[in-house]
Amino acid sequence: MTKLATIVIFLCTFATFSHCLPLSTSSRWIIDDENGQRVKLACVNWAAHLQTMLPEGLDQQPINNIVKQISLMGFNCVRLTWATYMFTRNSNLTVAQSFANNGLHDAQLGIAQKNPQILGLTVFEAQRAVIEEMGRHGIMSVLDNHLSRPMWCCGNHDGNGFWGDEDFQPKEWLKGLDIVAKQYKDLPMVIGISLRNELRGPLQNQSVWYKNVKKGAKTIHKANPNLLIIISGLNYDIDFTFLKRKPLNLLNMRNKIVYEIHRYAFTEGQANWFLTQPLNKVCDTIKKEIMNKSGFLLKGKNAAPLFVSEFGADQKGMNPSGNLFMGCLLTFLVDLDLDWAVWALQEVLNIVQNCKLFNKNSKIQNQKKPKYYLLFHPQSGKCLNVATNNVVQASSCIGASRWIYHGDGTSIRLTGTSSCLTTSREGMPLTLSKDCNNNEKSRWKLASNYQISNIDENGKELCLDFDTNYSLTKFWLGNVLA
Image (tube, rainbow, N blue to C red):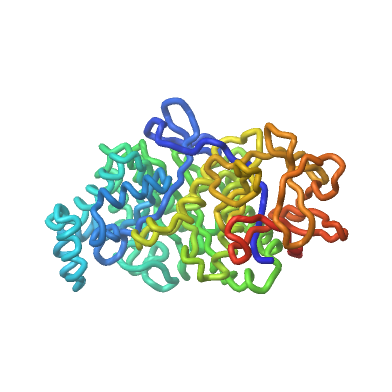
């Protein structure tokens, strides 16, 4: 058995743009300044840090269409990447010149057809046009300083990894942060700036990190005190353990500090784990590692928000490690109620047409703990629902069936009814039963942090599962994963 099924607590209403700007922080939460209400970031990454310095996809779709689709998919913000040199060395370069310089003549013709209004704009003006369009649709922007030299990211020796690298000089980096913070001071939908994406490479040094993070944070705050300041750790944005010993002292802007982390199946060479080890063990190990290296930031007197600003996998489902990883991570995001940004929107049409991403997006926007449970299968993005004919099936989590569960050895009851989940033997689908108190087949326990199990008529422990290779709609029982 290779899929995960789990109970998650989930709010019955989803995030909408109904809060006030600017945003600040209170302990581990991002809040609006007006009334102190939680604002949960549910974002998608949009790459704009490559050689053209233009958000990708504008040669294929009008800006308005792309932004509408971002909103329709349920995202309330975009993490828009940018390169320092765009502002410090190329601010007068037009979009047409940028594409011509890179030999992208077909793409330039595409822009002329889909977005002719931006060809004569400078790359900065084009970026602003995109941000303004997102704002008109209620989509917030987080501006991520991805690297200095416009190029693909990232490598240990690409010259962009850490302060002192060939293309990462502190003075020019600070100049870029200052320019960007000031340029968007009049646009409240720009809610934050990240200091730098994925610090890495042989020059990594904790004392240099403290020095430059403080300089960068102060530069942004001085230029635009309304902005959230998003800070990355070491080793490709996974490690903040040094803050356990020496917290970052930015008291005068403490209510603006957000920490960010990244996670993929391949992080720290772990992709093969998902294929060679028991999945429960792998998920638990990764969760413990995240909590040790960054999750501790959510607690204590220095608690701050933790923004998972990059995670993802091939949405075509062709990468087995990525498929299994996403189940682990989505469960983790739900459990800790974290702010997040999925990678990425580069291939706009592919993402727009993939409803699986929308389904998953809808699940992890919970903001407070409700009084019921949903049964959620992270990998498929589906929930266990009861249809009008009392058939138990897998379908959208929007308006999903609500369940009451009191712990190991008790039934899982459908709220407002006397019915509960029951089963008979391995490979058979779940059904509803009225016999909830004295029926062993209606008693459930958590077999692990990720699985719900039941004892069949032969005394065999079986796990609740959903696999589209077996059925497109049915939850069923299979062998418990060790």
